[in-house]
Length: 334
View (cartoon, rainbow, N blue to C red):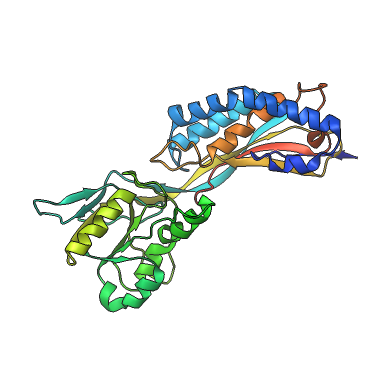
């Protein structure tokens, strides 16, 4: 009986699949080549510097799909094909402004960007007082009386003492993801969120957010960690400080995109597959080098090298099932 294998762009399951010495040697050879060869880095460099940010629905995302297909076509796989799907098409727009004390001689422009999926403010923007909160519990205690019509500023720093940094990220990212929906329950006009990062710098971080059907959709902006500290200090000295926010983001009709899939046929159990993969989309205001392209590009050398390594046969994991190499078009929108 023959078997299939699908390879996504993660290689962690490999280790538990092999016990024989010959398999271990083959795997070691594969790792030696992958770690010594610069193919992954060259692919990543091209994708990030020649294509750049590639949010789904954009021309850059379309170009990235074509590049991934062409790259897999050149790797001697049995089959490479595109899987069509419809993807969300959100456009950031040309204006992203957060100004503290607008109109004053000492007005301060903060480094800001729209959170992914945010509605726009309209051409006039939003001018209002601001309330700073640490978490959702503090927001709830303030209630509608103190929040309605105001801009809510979520200032929850990431905990640097947490050993597993993704845990620290998860703790603060929830204010970016759900902050607008929670603030809208109390009548807020917009939200400004401290960037979800441990870094202290001037770069605002975007990311996904979610609205709730039961409340009004309000604009959401992220500001850099340095500017979050600055705004917090300004509010301590001037409780009635006003903020001006303006962003021109918009939701467009869904667009056609593609998952890119490559297959190597195994020799046994054709009904079974193993999948390795990662998403090729990345936020439009960055290069997308880490989320998630380092996984995709690490995986790309494997189909290229797996046939000639060792004694010329597929390594044990690939002998039995069919491997598929997959780039997913729209992870960021879920």
